[in-house]
Length: 317
Image (cartoon, rainbow, N blue to C red; front, side):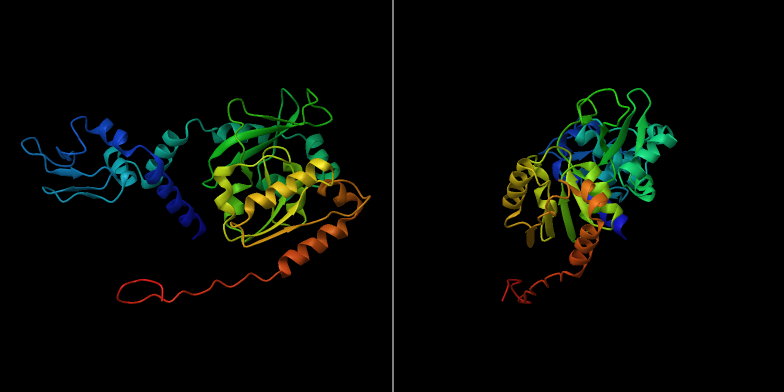
């Protein structure tokens, strides 16, 4: 059911943002916004133009009766693709470059025993989370790789995270040309009503290992992706950034950005003198994370106010 919902949202994203006129014209060069009839590709229509396509991609043939209810359906039928294949093809055209799953899996297959020990023992990331989020290793740089998927399950970036064996002092490096700020894990977050906003991918994975609904931005404490703000709409959000000055300022900024979007916003103060972040607290005071998990789980979700609609005019009463 959740996958079906995501597929529908992906289709809406495409039909809302893609240049449908350009797509239609690529298949029907004689199509125009004003004169929207073309020769139908689904039956012998050489003498007439019986196929009507409006600018949204909706189409209907007055000759053979073929219908397409959106641009995705139209492209699927023309290209003889499944709806899922056409949807992904159009989405790729809309967003530009995407990282092939084969690259992600190549890094997963390069995950060494030593790297697995580093992640699970030294970083306190549960092996099930390592597998779930497809962590791997870049053999050339010895960096841990974290694929960043969007809410439709399309890989939009790979974060190369420093380890004791890695090639440089930079904590995190983005896939070249794909460093736009994104949420991680975005797809999981869209399905969750409660969110714990933390600072950094490793802290996020540690939080999830402790059963927390942790989410982070692919950037520093002050980073924010404005185009993703509405993904927090009506959610209950706890903010638990690092205890340093950058983390405190970042938490204030996050709270400000979520005002009027999230239904509940709470800044969580970490335990004093026990380390600066979730990764530290997992070692020094794991009870803090377990209690935070229980507190978030027990927090009641506000009930939505039901609005009565007039059956005649359809306006709120």
